[in-house]
Image 1 (cartoon, rainbow, N blue to C red):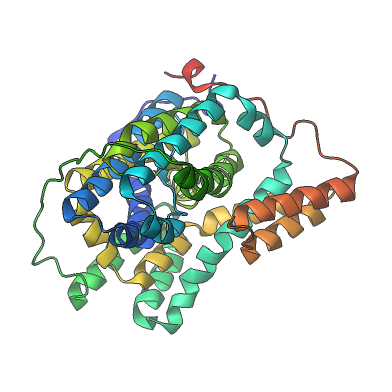
Image 2 (cartoon, rainbow, N blue to C red; image 1 turned 135 degrees about the horizontal axis):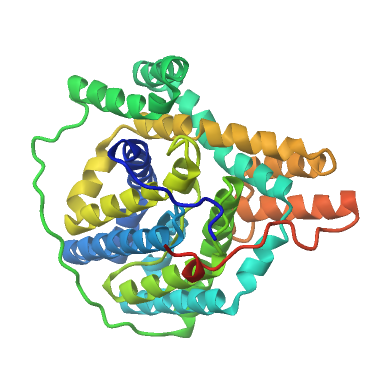
Length: 408
């Protein structure tokens, strides 16, 4: 049985999940998607191949998110691997056909990992306080960014913040909906989002025959696997756990890995369980009733597919939004999750100091050996917990049930 039993869905139940899904998609495209275009430029890809990359990754993310959310009745948000930054340099020296082969090897490794069952066992060993501290640390920069925009674009950021606070006082449920609508209206009135030249152009997939080499395996497939595992899947699962969802990690890793494998010949480097944008859809802002938050996963998947169908066109629209709008919108939408995570991290007196260490280490965003802050924050937190308490708990999380046994 699901930890959040599904209930009947009415039209009024759709507003908040749909808006949460839309915001997560806007933040994803407006935040990190520019790296895909930079990597495509570094690889010397044609406009057609670049559009195919957009098509494959958007369609793949959309379909896997919809399938997983529908099967689990939980908001399983998928996204592309945001550590695509290293692709900008890797693709400059790796032939594109070999890069596609490396994508496939990385994806196949995730399929095997998901089928093995080991990843879920590792997730269960993480103490709840440490997990909450890690999530709060990862999200902290987004919360800071919501207010940091005041020094760059004070009118836009100030409007969003004031409207958010006022709506929180008057009607908590519509605070995030309100800042999205009023923010977009403000930008359109100022003429800062030019839609006059917008033409919806259908994308067409371009197949690339993969090639395989040892150099691409070591320089691209292995780093992509490790960075995606530690920087995406691990915090992504902790986001779900923090909001009370108990889906098994293994089917999620298997399904997204299989999807990545199928889409790789069309340009998709990797897609996986989302972390930051997932938090927008798993908390109370998505819906007061946890049993209806899975609709946010469906909505996000539909929006991703729409972007994929129209290729670069809609992605370019999202990236045309001012950076301050994206960072402020994301930060305000995540305030509830940040606050809840901090409260959970500090709730257990026994593990409070280890949770605080985890929070600070994750917030510091340490980068060593090419691996980002989420992994190192978790490692430092677990070491601190083990030292302070004598050992790690044998199993910190509640038992979970596989997706295929919980589908409705």
